[in-house]
Image (tube, rainbow, N blue to C red; front, side, top):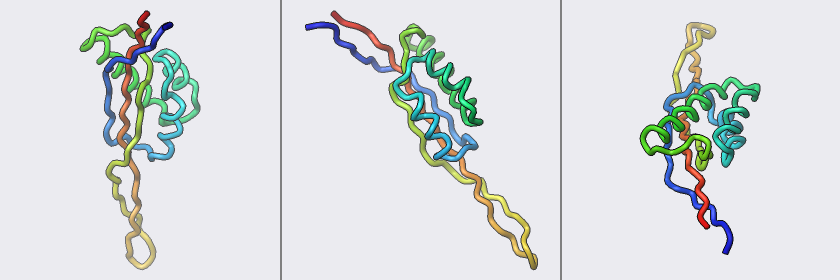
Length: 122
């Protein structure tokens, strides 16, 4: 009945407390989801966002986990799942008038990248 593409369980990498807001990270994650491993690295290298560097490090880490722990070939990997969650806020205080302090909340996020291997069955 033709070729069936079967997705196997892959490896993942988790980045905690990445100092980027969720909305800025989400536009990068949406772009690389369902891309191949090589295509995701090229996209992350040439996108003009500061948040691309931590995501590229996570993709490289997930690929290393897949090749070392599961014995998968890096050329067969693709980004099967990728998501971003809220994390803690860094709380800072800015001095204001009349001795008051104004809170500054600096957002962080958790990023999870999961790579899977494509295998073709006949």
